[in-house]
Image (cartoon, rainbow, N blue to C red; front, side, top):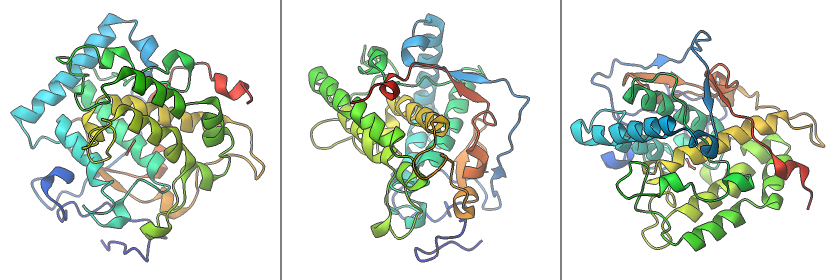
Length: 335
Ligand code: C2O
């Protein structure tokens, strides 16, 4: 397959050449044993049971859920030690994220998925496989990740269960260690004004998703990304140099809260689609072929290489999950 050059990004691009990763292994995806493995395309399977992603505060009322989540991350982190090459380990999961968001250091700038219209679908894909791998770790196929609904007062504080004990697999040492500063920064990142401007008022595709991937210097990120998404990352990340983990895209995937943070971003995409039309018409997903048909590599719960495209992840029901309905108070509040 031909790989697009930065001047030729208007057509769908094939999955990256993961065999030719330009940086050290710490920012590359694992490669399969043979170059003949091309990745099995994703196919929706509507007979699979539905998973329900619940808000952290609902999910954590159930001690058996907390046990499952904790155990799944414990096993995922243990896999790093037992078989560092297994793409399902936590460190390998972090590398997948790093590889696609290293400003093109890994596979060329056509495979940078931040700051352009691939941000939302790419993270949806990443969470989809990550969630299935967690389920596989605990042999509980309908396992669903929880979402951190920082867009509501009920969820605005950093989830205690993720910070309770340094020995918990949900804990991460490289975070903002000052609870007051974290609380203030999360509150600043999620004001009603901010949420309305990045979701409700970002009524066009360009504003919400960001613009097509072109040369990096001209790309434009969507407001959902540059708004609360980035600000919550920095609020949680370490506040001093080096800004690992949530504060640095290379390392963010190492913190379990990353996946719950992104589940909320993913949920807000579904919320956005249901909002009334904006001044320039109904809210829709991009329909350009270059967006719909570009393909990305991931590893699934059986450690098999898969390909998946934004066209595959339009409808979360096809992916067999839904979100718990929670109040969206910022929508009703004006200034
Ligand atoms: Cu790929 Cu929140 O970052």
